[in-house]
Length: 75
Image (cartoon, rainbow, N blue to C red; front, side, top):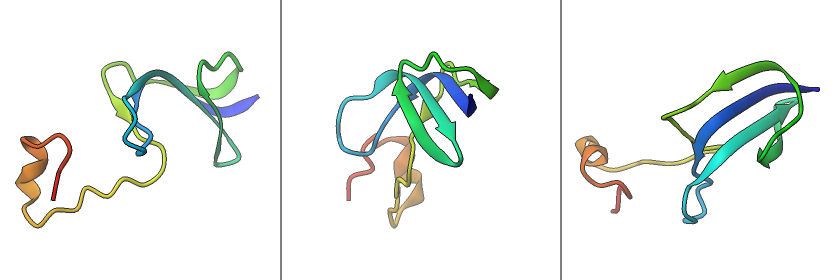
């Protein structure tokens, strides 16, 4: 049994790949499943309409408002 499943998420993995839609299964603080997750979990979060980005994504810019009009937050 997983500790947490985040389902119905738009998943952005930080590699530059196109976003995917699916679930993330977490156990012991680590991602154990990605995409289709059928395992049961102690906690389930429905992320419908939200973006989930496992890991760290640095949206650093010297003009913070840029994140509102530039979806890639390009330098």
